[in-house]
Length: 98
Image (cartoon, rainbow, N blue to C red; front, side, top):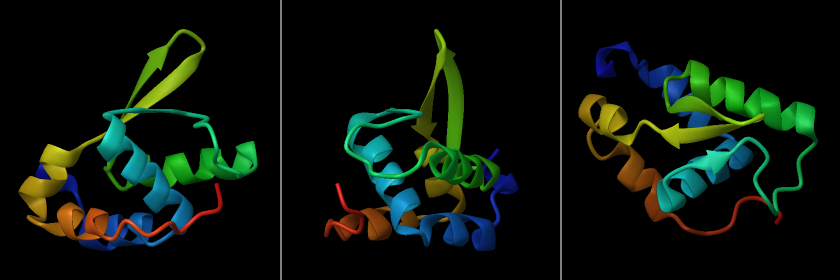
């Protein structure tokens, strides 16, 4: 539910370059696998980034075979914090090495 989103947790989740890149990918592609191509991050670190995004309420996760697919909860975030994601996603400069 949108009411469950807390601004501090959302901003913390969006404040890391790797997590921001994951959010950008989900916003652009609709969903993202748990190990996206071209992202140079150790698997354990990436798992931690996904956990932070999930606990902040920014993502939904669904199984797809042995993998997991994440989607951005954009409608919920936009309802709770109108314009936040649009502002964050408008800065399209690369923040992470690819």
